[in-house]
Length: 526
Image (cartoon, rainbow, N blue to C red; front, side, top):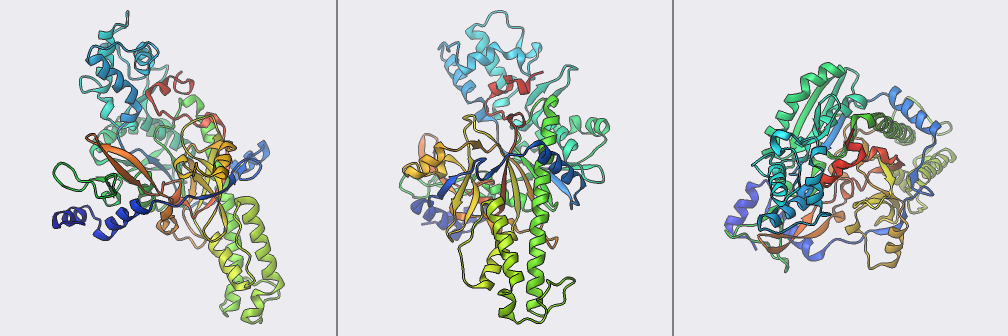
């Protein structure tokens, strides 16, 4: 299948032939559909907290012992999709066509003065919106004739302008957020920002412009790490007949494998508590109190969950240690001196297992197949407990594109909470379509993770990825159709085997900028 030149290209990227062959085979076999039990809703699967529970979670976060905190911000790639409609308008104007007044490009030009990146020196003062003025504004926004935003990453674009004249990029807003709810005990705020290598200088310049000012203003010390999506995680593309796609120079075409590849970057973080939020999900600082409050709620719930799970695991350890004759600090009453089989069948251990099963079922929607083997039951429960933890904020579904929360059935017959993208749902299956139609919530990517186990060690996150939860998408290269392989998404299959809790958060905390006109929404204006 591969030539000597292909093999050299593959190895130069840090991959190997076996991995690429497996990717090609995956295109042929496809991915299995996930078996949906039901959508996760407030009736079952999504926590809706009252004011007392909100206050309790915030206090728990503020008093909990935490071994380091970090904010993880996926910010790779250019903002080209954000300006897709503007590029279409620009192309039309270049060939003398008139764009409709209600088109996104025309609406953008008519509101140019409302954007934080507007200056009269660059764009002039609009008096009459003519095609030539439209062409000028779009060119100066998108190309190197002006701002060059069409090829820059979202993180360095000017999102917000404040009454005092301060202008902030999306990246700057994340810095302001971080100091508010992610400070460590020493006053530092750690951020890991995933970027593309070619954009590093832009992020460094954006950081240099505000770092000293913000550190003095907010009394914080920023520790910023820029990290790249490893080229070795790119996947090979294939043609419509599932043969490796070849470029005009007859070389293989590799493509970034989606945000699922970022599990490798997340796995390098040493801190215990990590907050994940996309680069474009920020708002004007007047909404920061809401964001701060609900981030603390999510972190408080994550830490409450952590401590409850850790407690159960230590109790199971006590039972196991007594069984094998190890010395422990605490013993379950009545277990000393019992034999190996007796201890797993004792009333105390059975009762503990009953408690754990009820906790997993009622709080995490995790059920496990019934087994008559008492020791196997204990080990199955231990395996379900001893996993990374994620608490995901969920907003009420407002028709935004993206994934949502569901209860699914695993291959071993157990159930779990998962975030599913629409492409992972089998629309030819009536039950799956009905589950989707009854879904009440949407995933805004507002996630808090606990990455250490109950003994203080970092989990190897790669051990908890469901390799069968990726998907195949249709793309093109220089006008030629191809198929691309997406790795299990960071908050989908890459976190499939984590302990998961969904918590409803208000819409005020979700303010994404998917297209440039989103910046005209109230959350991004004064």
